[in-house]
Amino acid sequence: MRIHALIASFMNYIKVEKGLAANTLAAYDRDLRKFERFAEKRGLRLEALNRDHIVDFLGDLYRQGLDSRTVARHLVSLRNLFRFALAEEARSTDPTLNLESPKVRRSLPTYLRMEDVDRLLNQPDASTPRGLRDRAILEVLYSTGLRVSELVNLKVSDLEMRMGCLRCIGKGDKERLVPVGRKALAAVQAYLGKSRPLLLRGREAGRSPGSSSTAAAIVSAVLPFGAC
Image (cartoon, rainbow, N blue to C red; front, side, top):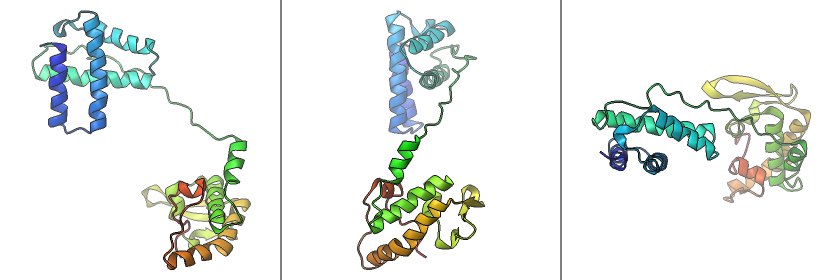
């Protein structure tokens, strides 16, 4: 069996038998077609492929400037291909056996500079109800480090203004107390006193509260701190 025919059979197998998603199928196809071109360029037949050829292919990927994560994905694709070849008796050995995956480097987390944070926090127009809402959203996120999903599920009763903290239900339904900075508390008080009543009245009248800024888009225009 030629490499091209093996790949075609494998792709049909994972599409029909495994029912993989279209994006996954496309990734397999790209990886394996790249290996096919590599083998054909060197005149390698399916039965002649060995471990050194796989290592050479992976090295070629590095030379093309691909990162470790992408190279590791190619190796996974090849492993599954040759396991299929063994099952179909197209080969008697697996050249990827005992071949270590490339070490995937963890990328450093990205962060905002102070001027970026200031610009983001000052984005909402505090002279409007929606701007006050958005300012409260951003200030609480910045002060507490809450997940957006946790923020939008907060209720007014979860806020302890005098203590300067809030109660939050996180992963695993675990409750925790989270400190809130003074500036964030002030933004929340301004929102609760001036903005929230107007937004709720607009919603009760059948008008959508909508979204007027990047801040509101963060929570998909869901009103924070519940409806009570």
